[in-house]
Image (cartoon, rainbow over all chains, first blue to last red):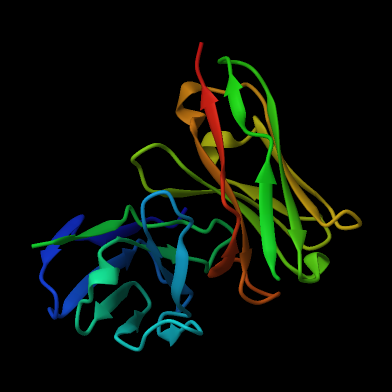
Length: 107
Length: 121
């Protein structure tokens, strides 16, 4: 099975900061990677699909990059609404494994 | 409106069974792979199972193989998860989820509101 490892687990940042979250796959997943944002008590929200494609309606300050086994989610200028937990998910194989999550907190 | 609505959660004793349902509306349900994803209290997301459009292929996370069964009824626009031999570690919010395109297994753009399953004596 493909394992997904996110880093860091927690990130403290200020409004306006540039934030980068990394996701590593245990084997190549080509570009079959998605990023989600989740707030407490809510279902996840899709941000990025196919590693770098921005989902409709998602602000352009979110961007994704990478292929193979190394991927990043970048928030170019952190906004108050962005404090949340972020997950990556691979969908190269029949098991849609998620990373363990990165919580973005207010510094 | 495209929507998924789960039901069937509740409190069950260890070793017991529960059947979750997910009612789909606003899109052609039979065109999509569908999945169940769960989240234990205070923990991350865990993919549980998925099922092909016609029900001919099903995949499960190792921890539920042999205990959970995913199924669908395209005539009723419904997805199901039969959960048997439940354990405390199955306690979680269970979400049904739809991928953004019909050929995809992931990148879920539509999620239900979730239904809570608590396994406890």
